[in-house]
Image 1 (cartoon, rainbow, N blue to C red):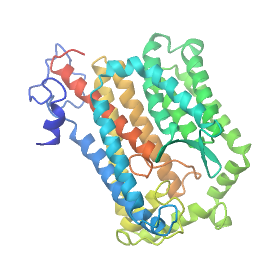
Image 2 (image 1 turned 30 degrees about the vertical axis):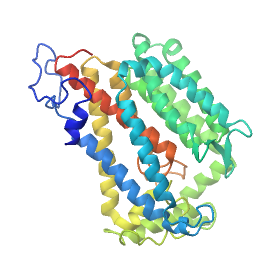
Image 3 (image 1 turned 90 degrees about the vertical axis):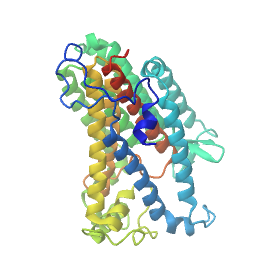
Image 4 (image 1 turned 180 degrees about the vertical axis):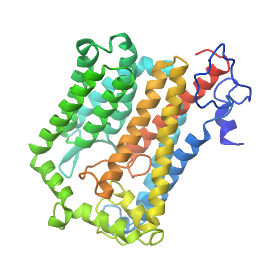
Length: 410
């Protein structure tokens, strides 16, 4: 049984192949009409490709570290087994999320956002949150650790879309449309910076205000927001010696190649060694205790070394395709007057695209070093599970849109 026919059974008539709706119902507004009974296979295969390639590369990049670490019990397969388990949990959670109608997601969005805030507060409580390398970002749950900031990104998408739909007729008002959302995001940002997790703070801000802009926020307000946000981020960097050192290290990593520029210099060496076609899968030298966090933040550098420029282009192409399909799914929903679903889809595309861009930029030395993983690929249970749920919600939006196009209810 094909993936299309398997998923197509989740909605009434989703597997039927019928003609496009008449122009009396939908008109000619669809710039890229698809046969309504088909699934968006470009979206499905790009997502699966990133997940599976991520599994392979996490194993390849972590073997040496796992085999030589007392923490892993000197088990070379430690990260492979855990990443496989996280993928299984993520796909199971995604299948469950796929059963939930978008109307239900909209109804519970504010409550999920509140739950996310509570988790961010709980992380900061001594003896509740777990501290690693000076950062308190995890909640221990038996054998695993949950990172609330990863789920907060998903909750921010769902809540910001719901908020925007409720304020659609007030998008031109600073006081009624922008100010309440800004206050809420500042609260979340304060909690994230206390962990500290500056990367998650930037992503959550981008998601929330990006969705407001897509929902019709006044352009002048958005321009003012951009300027204020830019100044605020620069101040946060300048007032923190740690972040300031990272910024200067990014500008010239070779100035202090054994200090602040250590990660970036070794990432650039990995890119240089990979050349066009790479040194071969499993043959990376930089992953042999030279490049820190090779299976998380700097996974793309290992891909570049082992698979070369060709491998990096494949990853970039799959991310580009995934984000393009997310925005296309969102646009189709908006054209069907399903505003919440459309904004959620485009918000997820914005989230995955922006975080992926930041991670790739850091690995290539185009952006300052920041602790953001590569979505769908890097090792990290909370991130993988949150990403899989987001993909399932995108698939649900596509299914519901196609159901409406066949003449079903919204």
